Image (tube, rainbow, N blue to C red; front, side):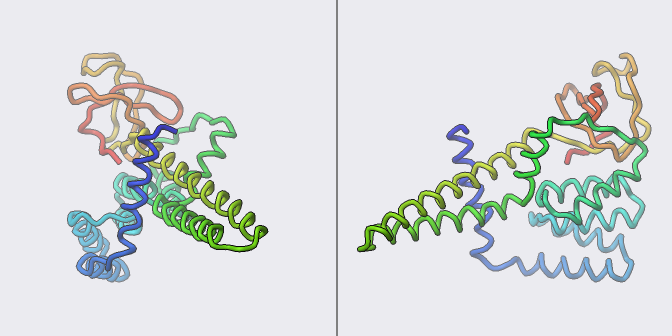
Length: 257
């Protein structure tokens, strides 16, 4: 792994852990509770509007986007439900409730895209670095480094050669596991940065062979469908579907995740 990726991951770990050292934002908490109360009463639009207020203050979390997805689904707005569930998934990729609701919302969209199967090792490795959130991996790495430091201190101050040897090798193991967790965190961050995705918000949309209205029509997709963004050109975006189909569509028909 490149040095700049390691440094970026380390800065990310510090950023992720900093909220643990400060008090929660009370206004955001109050709005979250207010939104939940609206949702419990069946006032889904008011709940969604309240959650949006939290986002506009700069506070984002998987729980907020998850609740926004739930409220949007209750309002029958499948494209926004998918968008918010996808945003929640990027923050909490290993959350079972988010993944279940996302899959359920996708089943309600007009297009049933069959994903191109991945090599089983790639699938397994992705399941590893997406098993927990980046903040969870950050906490684990910090704990591992602290444990390694504790055993290293024991190594320097222990009198028994047996204890010193045990403490030294144990410290090495903890430091290695800590660095490996940093690597996993960096891999997760790079994965989401490399996968620019968007949700279709118009229906139907004719995907073109080139970024021009007069170009040849390739296929049609509908609102709620997730696409990968490959390129952009003068108000058009080159997209790729999970089944491998590639084409151009207008940027105004998409909302990036």
